[in-house]
Image (cartoon, rainbow, N blue to C red; front, top):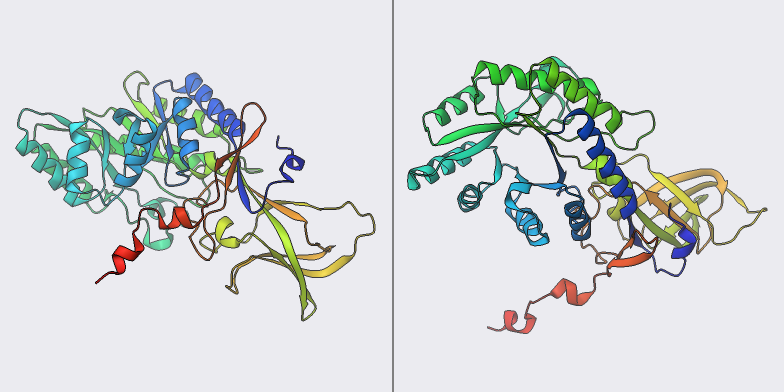
Length: 412
């Protein structure tokens, strides 16, 4: 539990990483897997939160990493993740990266036709080498559960389609090369309900494809992510993991022979970061009180699509007779008109110095927040000693400019 009075002297805005909370969540997942499907890999989604200290903590707790670019791969490799502890996904793998992953016997899920050609080219050049790859399947969830796809009626654009036969063509093409084994399938989907039934369905879908195409070398099932985490009245890890394991057993799979991979992002990482900002000015326009914050919506909602937030307001002063405002608009520091968090109606009027804490800010915030007007805010961390320490200082001009020699660049 964070005591925010201990942050009163910290200049806002800032992110606060609750490391003990993340450790507790990871331990819960690991124990559930131990109880229900001991052959597993917890590969956290790096794109969701690539903060290096978080990655290092995940490594220390025995987790793996899931990446979708070579840059992300290089980051987690730098942190200390081994090649067999990194799941490489994404549709834009270069030939050199694919070849490097195959050299390292790394976990790679193929997501485009050109990547297949890169793999074939690799084994042609290395005739004595046997390689194993996974394939990302495109699951047409709309065909089975209308209204479930978060990609709407068009469906997901990733992977190879089972329904139109493209997946079969890919499998048959690979089978022409005895040096290439298909040892995994990746079935990540994003659904509206995120219900346990969606994951049971994926298990059944996986089983159908394995049997239809006689994938005898299958060693892992990558079920992806898109789990709820820490949300009221929503499924929890205690619902998801037993349901997936139960369906795998019903379909005849053996935990001693099949590794289950999950790639949690939002469901694991959102809850362990907060964002703190302070009121720096109050103004009234057309009967609306505007509370101007030193933080911005670009830090907590970079895609500008959220309608609701989990938040707490921390008044600077306790006042029993605080004035009530009919309508308050909480706005950020930028010069964009849509830099508005939300409105309060008939609530105590905010005053300069009051703070707001946005909770569940660990997913797609640090990785998507732009260098717009002001550079990255600092990140603090609550550690296991219940101390709040600086994990990354605020970026300034030196971090922004980095190694660029501006004068040299402008010389003719």
